[in-house]
Image 1: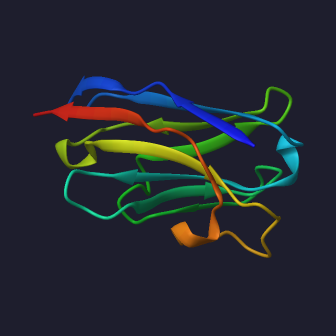
Image 2: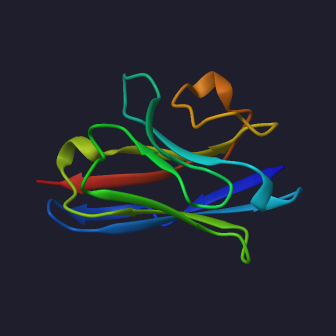
Image 3: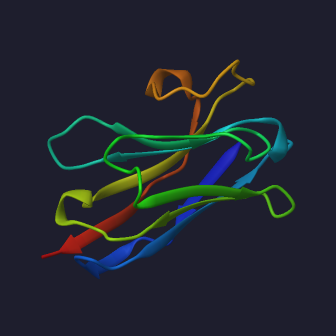
Length: 125
């Protein structure tokens, strides 16, 4: 399974970005997808997750109300729409998916087996 994250960049505080994650190597629609981020000197942290159909989502408290995770199973793409960005959102953002379907959405990095290469998001104040 290969994941490719894209869409990062430099944006001013209050701005928006949409990250994309393309997947290949297996049936995309059968598995949940998640976004994590890692800032310099910090541990990787959960941002959002979505189930196989898109009917169920889960967000970190820091993302609720500002970020939206979605997916298009016809295009093998997952998205993270980020609005009202803050300087503290600056990080490398990774998409991830587990090796097998999970009974419920999880925010633990160890539950995800495949990871994209990351895309840098920088929010200036």
